[in-house]
Image (tube, rainbow, N blue to C red):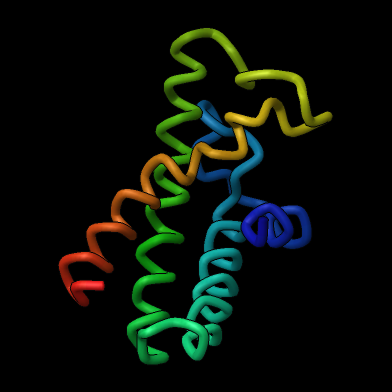
Length: 117
């Protein structure tokens, strides 16, 4: 969501215009930076330190972006723009989960193997 907001406010340079024409470099950098800061700031409700929470948040933000790009590539390959039409301007419910496809399994592995939680 922060990548979207930063992209709308500051976005000028497209990252992958053929796959996802609305994604911009400014949106990517601003969104990753802000959401990493928010993730690190919420360390106090997790078993992690500030730096650990920040590192996890950074990894998940980068993987979330990659998940969105890969899922966009799959959709373009299949000749569709969105997985549905449930949410006006945003596609279907599955479109909201594009970034989770990459980020969730990595989060599980980081937490399970690094901290044994």
